[in-house]
Amino acid sequence: MIDNPEDLKEKALEFKTELKKQQIELPIGDEDYAFRVSGIGAKSVKIEKYIKYEDIFEAIESGNENGLEAIIKKFIEDYEDEE
Image (cartoon, rainbow, N blue to C red):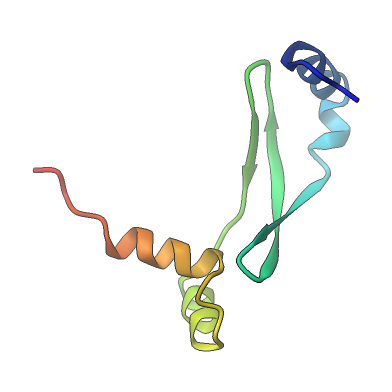
């Protein structure tokens, strides 16, 4: 078990190529979402997922009101320009 950031970073950098071929499954609401590992660096790990606008509405219309799609929709709806 790794118990400090430096050892975690060393292992991530050692297996950078292999780790970037993996996906991370994260539970959000009632669903599990697969995120792609798009970057492994000296300071952080970058994960990403593309969510289509159509998928946002399909998920919400099918009753998934606590999932990633609903979070993204609310994030966009609630945004106000700071001017």
